[in-house]
Image (cartoon, rainbow, N blue to C red; front, side):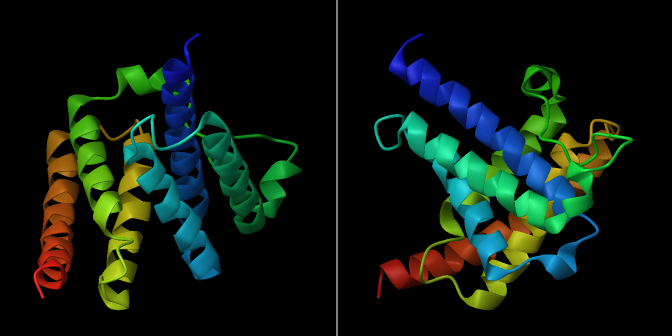
Amino acid sequence: MSYFTCVETAKKELLCALIGLSRAIEGNESKCTRHTQKIFLDGLYMITLSEMMITYQEIMCHITLLHGEKQRLVPRCATCKKKCGRNDDFPKDKMESLSEYAYQLLQSILSIGLFVSHQGIDIKTKNQATDFLYKALFQVGNTNKQNPLFYENYRKEGGKIFQIILNQYFSLEYK
């Protein structure tokens, strides 16, 4: 397997781990910290980087961070005797079978993730975007929801947030 293939495979694992973390966050939003937000947003950003800008090892280390944060949010899952899989990472083999609507939502998520961590984005917008990203990524991994209208509502909400982020980003770039 080539180096670039290894990095691409690791990026898929990273995305699956991010979905797993968003599953753990759902219902535990009050336990989220700045650290949760940072590693979540850093993970989304890492997915958008080219293979020349990130290493396999960096991605795998970040997955370990995500798993640690998930363990902090839902500690009982690790010792549960009746494993339900609700907070598990999304199965990598199911990535190929996501609906086109889920892929479109995922594209919106990655677009927002690329810009939201920029230092010029105000904290209110960053928090609003992060809350949306948690919910939207949870829905990408929720394969029970296949209704196109359901995904379209998320894409519209994401579009509004992305517009706010881009307005802030470009107003800083041209000052």
